[in-house]
Length: 255
Image (tube, rainbow, N blue to C red; front, top):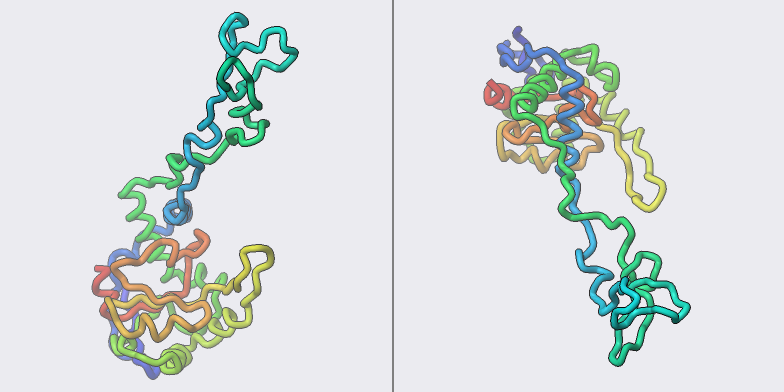
């Protein structure tokens, strides 16, 4: 399958053969699994000190004839602080006691990452790439008038100013989707705060280029190097079919 390479003026120039990854079957189940796997890698282990609430002299004395026993004292036989000469202190250790341990604390050694087989993960990535060339999937969310997949000449990677990036995207007829993302911004409620912005165009470049910084302030637009592209970027929320713009060099690197 061949597609046109757009110039920065929006005119179609040469034709280029798409890499074999674009011929992959779109497997939404694998894409969803890979997305959840990548999201789980962002989780941070947390947990209390494993000796929290237990660093005390309190211990449970079960035998009635044992030293420090509570036999015939009219007190509950619970772990209590032990003092010299058989004196007994306050209840400790148990969760309902003052300064006691937590009942069911989080454990930092808990496995949080959802693992995925390497072959499945690679297939999911190829499937997410192929979904960017499926017009029906892309148009379910995005608004644009261009033909997918969108391939632009390498000059776009050298742009250093945000206004120049916006001009190129408008020339390729992607301004409707940029407006959708800009107008769809909503302030998050609750403690988390911040602003929630809809995802718009994903621009894939071949390497460390000036465009990485020039386009980062455009609402909804993400720029990523082709070597570090992820399923979560190609399929936000695990849903395949993001509007993606490829540079000509980035397309060659995929092959």
